[in-house]
Length: 115
Length: 111
Image (cartoon, each protein chain N blue to C red):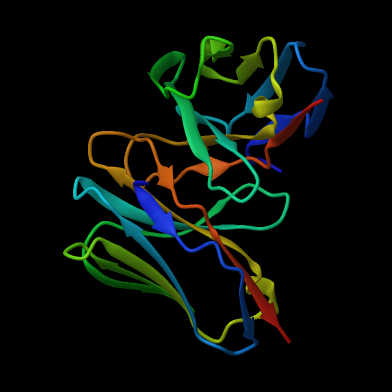
């Protein structure tokens, strides 16, 4: 399967702990996106990268959140001092290039539960 | 006011029915319109995209955009049980790659 891969699929953590998620985009896709989806809602944009450069960050991305994409390949999303409100599905997507005709391909997400 | 409004449903229809899914948006700067399908515990997958007013057809699916009313629709003809999923509309403006999603409409097609 050469789609977007996200690990882990599920993560349960206690409030106050740090967690890190990984996303492996489709090979040679330059753009990588992180979204968050809560139950009954559509995905909400968090941030995106063009190669290794982080081009845009949402106001949703508080200073407890940090995303990286070293070498423009895989990406990690870290949440420090997790809160119960961080419980959600974290979705990663990649696209070949800029433009509406270059669709976003989503992974199946990492489901985070903060207890 | 949310930038994109979508009725969450659920919508339950018999197999073979024509399904109409709708979204409204608030900002005329939005120029690109997409429909995604999301099965349970999966990521969204792109069904169709369009950037002009009018209709775009792809098999059993038709996307319709009315920019004057800020209204977008997805029609599914001859609906099948395998169409049971959540359908998300998504929009973006010309100067960003950020997609803004609706809440999604949950559709169930029963045999």
